[in-house]
Image 1 (cartoon, rainbow, N blue to C red):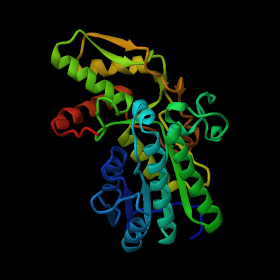
Image 2: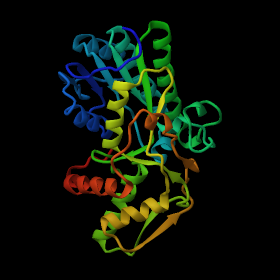
Image 3: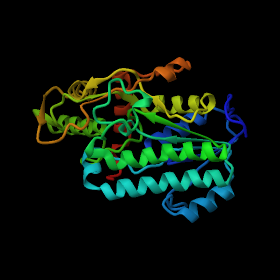
Image 4: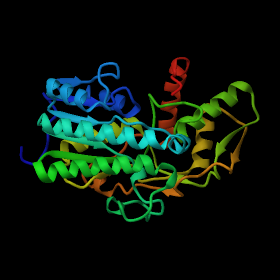
Length: 321
């Protein structure tokens, strides 16, 4: 298959790896509007993505035309620090097994989903795609970052050696329906949303956030990310990865105050400065994606309102993971 040009998803069989996760489920919702012939999925009881032979056999049998690789072991600063072996090993295996199996099954196009943590801790802001591998990583999430960098390079290697149309996209900090609300291992927005909600129900005077609150982040709703990924799958075919972000950032404290407003918590926000801030600033340079004609739909406030509505509807069944 020749590289480049528009890739039409209509009528295709599309594999979404990680379809039960926040991003994977958002991709599923987005593909439902795209007119694909069939969305292919396999839950953990059916397919262990850490098992190379099982992945090879499943993909060979399913014969997808296209693939979104959104599966990953994910978590916030605490989880990355506490489980470095799992974060490195599992994410390396998921990337290697899925990408190699797609190559062997001659999948027409594959999009590997990475993370903004691939960039150096002190990268120039906003972070451009060419900042990759130009400096040391943030120590609290380097294990996850190294695995994601390996996935990018695998896509490039199969593209160079075998002519595969395998591409990579790097999203910014994501939140939204289907997020992980674990009290210790979740990312910053769901962690703060749960704290604010619990504080409101308890009639507390305050809730606590980790760090100084001065770290700056670019936050994107998962449905915006999914829309961007489908757009990229259709319109992008280059060896280099492409950033997916909103082009705007706020401090963690500003985000926490917006969450409190959305939740309806009127008390104080305190800070545990013994906890790490992580990278001082992570603002994605989304120039390339916007130049292609894509823009996000949600601003932070409306996105958080949507995420909180989902949390309220599902909080009794949330998994502690």
